[in-house]
Image 1 (cartoon, rainbow, N blue to C red):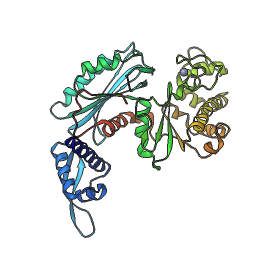
Image 2 (image 1 turned 135 degrees about the vertical axis):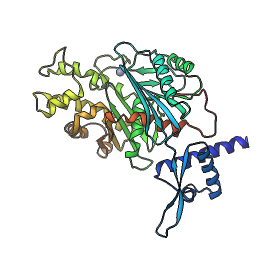
Image 3 (image 1 turned 45 degrees about the horizontal axis):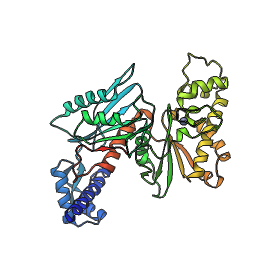
Image 4 (image 1 turned 120 degrees about the vertical axis):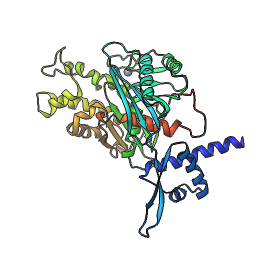
Length: 401
Ligand SMILES: [Zn+2]
């Protein structure tokens, strides 16, 4: 028991030290000792192990102060260790190998016209990428990002935009074809939210909502740097919050769900219903096309956006009434709606929800754009921070949050 405890403490100290090295542009052993309250001897021993196992590099002596004193600077070894991240989307699968310094070592993207066998395609891409870097890079884990909510206790799929079975078979099948490397499944919104953390400088007690405005609508509640419920997307089904209790019944069982009114997948129907000029069955209404109409002052687009903003503000305002949130960050394809839409949202916001909370909530867009593909780094960082262990064996583990 004592030995086990020591291993846990050692693992946690190694992670602390590694994280400090990762967040710095070079840090000395002495500074690590000061920041961690560990002895210099203990830090040196742990650093030696991190160097020997290929996680950290000693850059050698660098002048660190005006007195001309030299210290050996430690940096993350950008090569040699990577996390393979897949993003499963309705019509494509993309895989990236993310190094521990967040750089991308290699990637594959495959688009599909018909139904996708996600397990088979992931296995193929895994083999291809692994072969490219074999002998040079240790793959610490495989993360799958998908627009899916999973029950982290039994692996049952609660909702997904993808055509995957509503049970736990997809995870079991993937585990069977990638048998040893730790395998983690994350909700897409959680990965975007985690990638946003470096841009959130707030107190630990700050509660925030990261909203993913996409084909569907997802949300993650963050308390400080902690994502409530982990990365399974299981804490809130914000896209299925009802904005019209007599509205059309959703597949989820609820009526008038937010994502069926404001999600990108609902825009065609919504525009037709609204009577937006020039919309017919052949036109594809997207956030981008709506933004184009709005900013080129086309007829009706201002009013159409106000209706969308009204529904979104109603849902967010009521969520804030339940859970006092200091800020709401909007990410995803919906960001293209721009400042004009954000202003509309801010204008109707005070009319929704409990005023004492709402009045203090900041609304802004994400610092990351969808084309940044920040979800890959977000997933890799989260996997490393939450699941990776320097001291415990991780083989064959399947992680669902
Ligand atoms: Zn629903």
